[in-house]
Image (cartoon, rainbow, N blue to C red; front, side, top):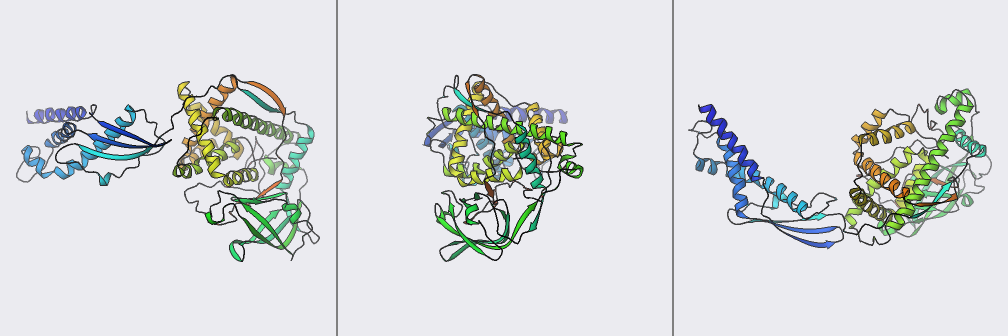
Amino acid sequence: MADEREEESGAVAVEGAEDAKERLNLDVKIDKTGACQRHITVTIPREDIDKYYDAAYSDLMGKASIPGFRNGRAPRKLVESRFKKEITDQIKGSLLMDSMTQATDDNALAAISEPDIDPVGINVPDDGPMVYEFNLEVRPEFDVPNWKGLKVERPVREFTEVDVEQQIKSLLERQGRLVPHDGPAEAGDYISTKLTFKDGDREISSSAEEVIRIRKVLSFRDGKIEAFDKLMAGVKAGETRVGKAKLTEDAPNESLRGKSIEAVFEVLEVKRLETPELNDEFLKAAGDFDSEDELREAVKKNLARQLEFQQQRRAREQVLGALTVHADWELPPDLLRRQWGRELDRMVLELRRSGFSDEQILAHENELRQNSRAATARLLKEHFILERIAEDEKIEDLSEDYDKEIALIAMQSGESPRRVRAQLQKRGLMDTLRNQIIERKVIDMVLKEATFTDTPYKTDSEDAEALDQAAGGGEDDGDIPEAKYNAGPESTLPDGDKSREQGKMGN
């Protein structure tokens, strides 16, 4: 009988706990402090607090251990006195969680980050209501723009054997080796150089040795040197050339934003690229191809994927340009800083699935870094609008969508889908992949309702050499996951379909 009474008591306690989680009689005050910022004050009435206390003590009565009494047989008043602190801490957490959830749900607050709240500084009073405040970042309020019937230009191109030859030339170069060159350097050659950046007489940053290909533009994370090929024209080992690196307004070193700094190149050696022959050994190294024809077919498929990416990117730019015309909301600087790494990750994932090389990805990444605030603000606004359309149109992510995306990334990287999935999960990028899937589905839906005008497509030229560093220093990227690159002549050369190594084939 005693066991039956204890089971009955436990059942009552569970029922009491469920009752306590019924709707709270909250008083919620919301102050709009910005387009994406809300300051929320929540008042929980005494009767709701008492319900939580009663449910918690009822649950405890059947198992409380107090000296002089059998377990579960101590008087309630004694149990309340003995365990008040523990119970108060327990119900404080429950009250905060339940009330915040109800407040955000009831007021349709689409949170985009965790609430800014300090639970330690909040107390459950002995008498009267419990009042607390917190800040919340939310999706801005806006009217969904008309997305039907947009006019879109679509880049098109029939790839020729000349395009294929250019791609194969790039593949041969990436498998090539650098050899010393005694004569003056020309465009396309490499220099081994000590690189120092200065602001006046003050040294900002330096590298003991960098191997850099001479191209029209030399880009960094925070800026670029234009006409780099002219700066290095005819340079020989032992010479020093001095150029100007223009830093962007988003450079990590705030004191140098927008300034031009001096770039000193102390050339240690000039090198020229020797490319291998297109033979069986190269075909195996490039992707385990059985014949040159098979390599050419893989190149054509990769070109088609890159064209598809450019079509999607150009369509996306036009569609989102039209949708965001009136998206003039100011986004919080803290939000932009936090989201910057996620947007960078998303861009890298998109390029990887589309068959771009590590070298090309680094160049795109530097371009995005150089305008990080403006780029992140634009991408966030686009995301908010596309997410809202997805909700209105009931567009969802499906398990097969993830399988497809992961399979494409795996095909380009030469790794198994299982390994790619594990890497994405380890780096916390599945949410990024989810956003990518949803946004692409929305864009596809919008494009089905659009009218198209075909325009010629030009392949990306290799006019820029990218270095994975900030010329102006001042970086602190500890929270931003870094892409791993195998760029350079010594890189392994996989193809787009049959790669057996890491890397990607590109222009």
